[in-house]
Amino acid sequence: MTMAIHDIPVRVVGPGSQSAGLGEGPSYIDMPSEMQQYDPPLIPEPEDVQHLAGAKEAMAWLESALYNYHVSQEMQLANLNQIDDASRELINQILGEGEVSINFSGTPKAQVQESILAGVWRTVYYDENDEMAIDLLEIAAVPHVVFAANDEQRSIDLANCATATDVPNALPILAELDDRARLFAANGNTHSINLTLLPLSQTELEYLDTFLGRGPVDILSRAYGKCEVISTLTPNIWWVRYFNSMGTLILNTIEITSVPQVVAAADEDISDSAVRLSEMLLSYWPKTA
Image (cartoon, rainbow, N blue to C red):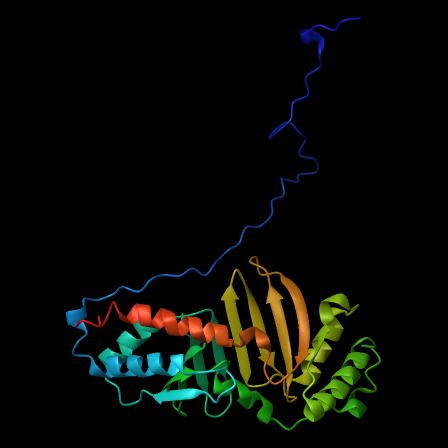
């Protein structure tokens, strides 16, 4: 039997074709709410910055130091305290703001901002009145203030947590951290525990957080998503948490290391920064000027 085209049943699909059910509307995947993007600096005319000798001297030091720096060396520091405000403003304009920000809540307090050049940091220390005390330009794989997180002398007291029977899955983790922290202190072997893969309740996660305590260093790396690196009160033990672009936690780890590698620049990054800086400075102080 041949079916005519007008006999073929039509099923409507698309918006409005389906019943709404019990008052439920359509569900959509959330889109990213924010994303870091590079905004090029507004470059002044060369004649407008020729008088800013402080900025020119600081950038010449930075350019030379970058070409000669390796991450295995000690950090290189330049004290900008005596520089004039116009030169400091130009330096900040040239360097811009990168993805990593660091807050140090110890004594003295400090804030660190990565520049758009990997391995180049702006570090500011504050006095007891929250006034700027020291202004540093720093070249390092990791800013020197981060290592202050390991100055704490507290260790994991397993006897103190033995009675926490309501968090049974947290106790083996603390025992592992205690063992691995001792091994790291003895031979430098790093270790990581992926909490995302473990059957931990929210109560157990909060217990680990409370028991380990919060140290003075809080690092935030922003890109397509973000990464939080938080020191604990136990030397060389760090929380490292990764979030996707919608702010959802996708990886929760505890790392035993002097500094998590996620915030450290490599030699290749430093070399690239040296080349980029040389190119950038030509716009401010042409070699023919």
